Image 1 (tube, one colour):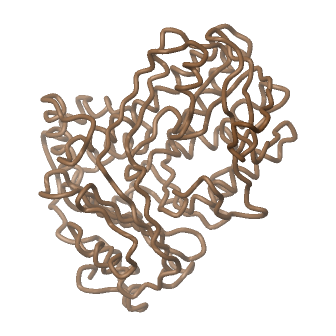
Image 2: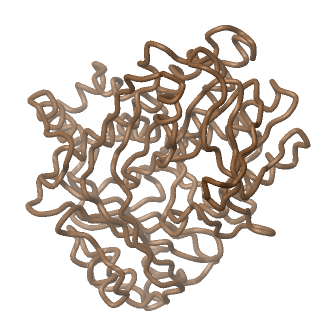
Length: 460
């Protein structure tokens, strides 16, 4: 949908080839997006990109019940180095709501444009054209039978947004384009998620609560996040690498959360009412395809989103990188024009920049788990981890260090900014305030927890 928003002002018609049907009305689950049952956050870097493509989207989300969460003002975060302070001078934010709501608000705006047509129940099975120029796609109905007739759909631009399962490497090979470099870093992470009724419902603005994993803690990396979403609900996702995966058992859900590096999320759930069963996902490997490096790239072809790079979802970057990629496509079209030679290659290289930033953040963490497959940390990786660890420790008591990390994590600044002189100095000086020994809940939050009987000692 964001790709359609990016290109619709440059072409007479936009055709979206979509295997599944959309919900009949309003936000709702749809086939092909099983990850919607897990907690999602939209980083400020992604939210700003969506607003640039579809002005007013953030306001529409907030009006529908989403929360704009200033970082770390409205967050309770147990990082690898300790509790982050809830600084009142927030520089970045995230949007907290369900994936279904985000999809609906974006989809409603895009499909209101008469130039956009959706071909539901269809899928792309190949590219038309040559290794020099793509002229369209071959489409077949969703039955998946090779004997079914295929239809050729001509296009002046083809954009692949079909996700992790994209057939683009094979389709390029069929056109004679080879040599694609790919990377896969798999920590073996599994997700288990469940939705709960938030104590007090919509009446109280609960913070986002997160307990992060640490590669330095013996055993599998395990974490959890609690995200308040529309409808007075908490979406809670547990995560664990190989040997520490959460499962489907609803009776084990809260105990898993209580067994993390800190039990705060498990304690919050003790008296919360579950609204759903437990959903588990294991497709979480970091996977990247380096299309921007190919010596030959066909005109009129662009790939973005998870079809270029998919990340371990624990870092919350997938939607934001996709949005920034779509914005890069729009801006490239604006600079060069739809018919300019090399436009597609220029767009692919522009898309690679936010991809590379998120990739370095995810892989830079995941390679340090002993269960990770695909790559082991080199000396430079270990040195960089030591520096980031020092900076993270400083961030527990230094607003400047916390801000530097936040701007990178929200994809508003490149990872290289962490090596600027000012940030280096903050890391060297360390935390300027004493480290917190417990989660920093406000008096109002503690009162609401006591009132709803959802508090135990760890949150007092």
